[in-house]
Image (cartoon, rainbow, N blue to C red; front, top):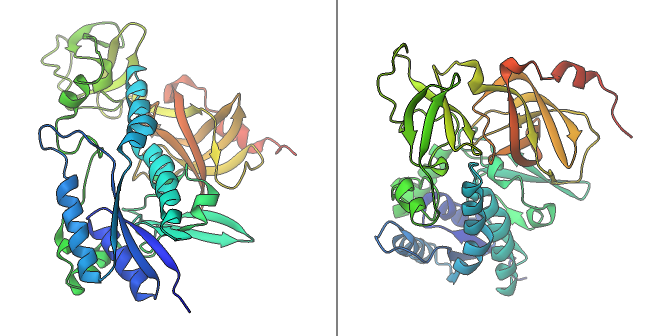
Length: 377
């Protein structure tokens, strides 16, 4: 009887390498597939060529075939152009969510089928469980590496064809497995940042793709305390890189970015990480992607507003085309353009783009009253 073929998305890193190793040892007919998703690297910041060679060497060591394909055109159209458009609107996008939905669990999955596989696998720290025919996304066991936040927009259908071999493992154990198998990537450092930017300076890269306007940095009271080089280069909660020096009548507490005023092209800053304007009790979202269909609302749940944040207790209620999230406790630097990802226990229900948030001192949170509302039929 022929073994089931699985195509593993190989990145040249330790996680995908161990995913391939584990599946091979479980008896699958494992093939690797390396995806080239970016085709500009005039200054040598991209490591795709080196990463491909690492993936090739790993596949040789594991005695499995390695395929390669370029999705650069699809990535530019479906991820990068959306990323730039969001920056120009003054919000802070997260392209990894779109990359997973459109590329890794869209085009990659379709190409794997052309290579004769029904399933794909990745090195993500997440889990999938099938219950009564429904495919559920669960948080990875390693809380520090859990990547369900980035996977919340993947369809249930795609999840049903996906294996996550690392979901039950801690990262140190993954490195141990790689080194024990003699894989040279066992000590390779994890990649960081946005894939198409690599190690290059973010501001330098973005300046070459969108037009920006300098403007004032002001306090809540309207006092100008500095100049910014363009709204797209900044994100809420930012401390470094604001360039604010000594300010008359101000304390020595550090400055933080509390708001972007796109209409006036102004950054609003406050002093101290605990300033109430940095905290929100309520946020609004765009349309929600529900992995297994919408639940009854209002919904008691927990919500993460950024990667590596433990989901916080909240109530979700309908609000126009999106949802309103009321938190039990104020959340720090809730940022439009990022995602509100919804959980019940270890299960990820889905998520939505954040469109706005209310400061904690505005008195607008309806957490307690929302909890007491009857659920709709």
